[in-house]
Length: 111
Image 1 (tube, rainbow, N blue to C red):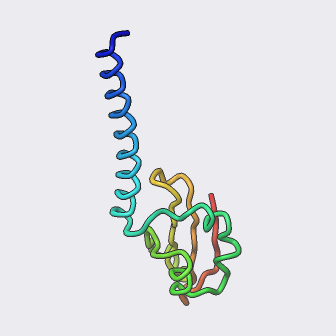
Image 2 (tube, rainbow, N blue to C red; image 1 turned 90 degrees about the horizontal axis):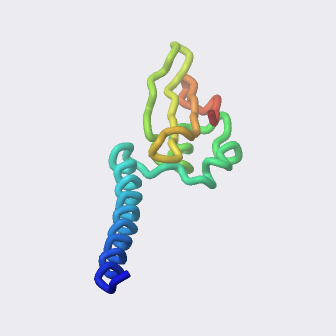
């Protein structure tokens, strides 16, 4: 392989690495821009049963987990909102929190 071919190959490889790194960063920051807060980190996701307890207020949940990614309206007159906290930009994993009409946690789930 000639010296010129090695240089071209090296430049192309560096460009690919930079594009991948920039793409990952753009994806992360676009998530935060879209939802208003970063994805829920893995530690909080795994420890959610210890962090979020039944009876907590909305304010207490926000203090622990941050601003919810969505506020879904109540389904019945006895429900409050439900909040998903997504763990990544693909929305496959999330922590769900259901509030009652007094705006206190009464159920959490991880699908």
